[in-house]
Image (spheres, rainbow, N blue to C red):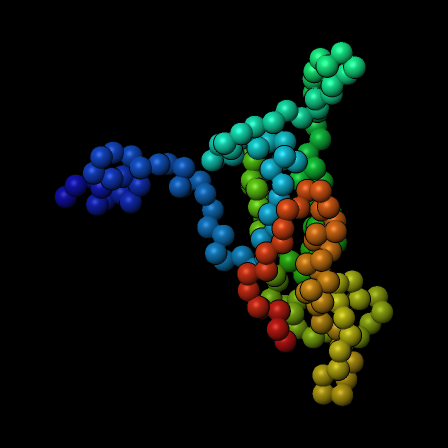
Length: 168
C-alpha cells in the first residue's frame, strides 16, 4: 500500500499542500460576507498569501517622501465582527479567521426563524406578519443582509446569501 493511499494530503510525488488542511469549507454556511482585502490588517498572515500587498499608514508629504506610521492595535474586521455579534447574536452565529481571513461566515440559528408572538420590545431584525389571523414576528432577512452591508461600509465587498433557510 502506497503512502498516498493512506493519507489524502500525500500524492505519489510527495506532499500536495498542507494549506488545504487550514482552509475551512464554506459550503455549510448560510451567508458569506466577503471583505475588502485592503482593510484586513493581518492579510499577510493568511493561509494563501496575497499576490500583492499594501502598506497601511502611508502618508505622502509635500516633498513626495513616504512617511510610515504604524497602525497599532486597530483591527477594523474585529470591530465589525463585534458589531455584528452585538446586533444579531440572537439570530445568527458569526465565524471569522482572524489570521487574514477574507470572509465572515454566518450561520442562522434555527430557533430564530420560528414565529414569535408580537412584542414591541422584540422587534430587532424582525418584521410583523400574520399567521392564522395572529400577529407574529419573523426575521426580516433581506433587511438584515442590507444591515450587514451598511454596518461594514468600506470594509465589506459583498454579501452572499447561500441558502433559503429563512423561508417560513
